[in-house]
Amino acid sequence: MRRWNIRLSVAVLIAIALVVLGSGCTGGKAQPAQSEPPSGKGVVKEFNVTAVQYEFLPGEIVVNKDDRVILHIKSADVTHGFAILDYDISEMLNPGEEVTVDFVADKAGEFTFFCSVPCGTGHSGMQGKLIVNS
Ligand SMILES: [Cu+2]
Image (cartoon, rainbow, N blue to C red; front, top):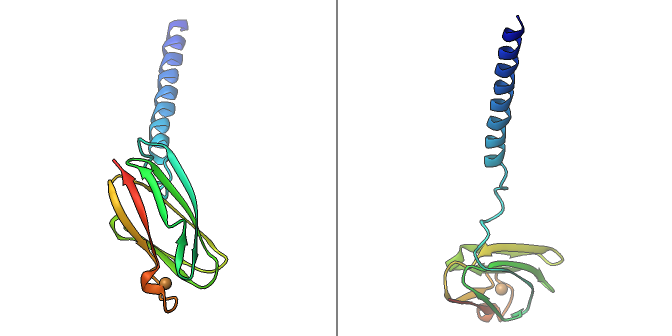
């Protein structure tokens, strides 16, 4: 009788352990938020960027390859856009709203970022440079 009880408790403990381990596994997989890009091997670089007719301030953003780049972008006047084709980034910047762009700079080189929303006579020249050093 006593022996049966011990076996039963061992079986119950094993069952509990399996349930806990099992849920732990699925929980772990479900954890990473989908909106978060995988963090790069480099450091996090954050910049505040202002779009204003007809330029971006700063006009040059310099990071190292594999840095995680976080840009907080705002328009100071009219509606502008912010696009970097090579990084598949295209955002609309409504006045008074801050847009956050978050990506890993996994390609080295010089990339033009530009206004993608017609904003006036100087629109076509409204651009800056993202420099990713290898
Ligand atoms: Cu524009």
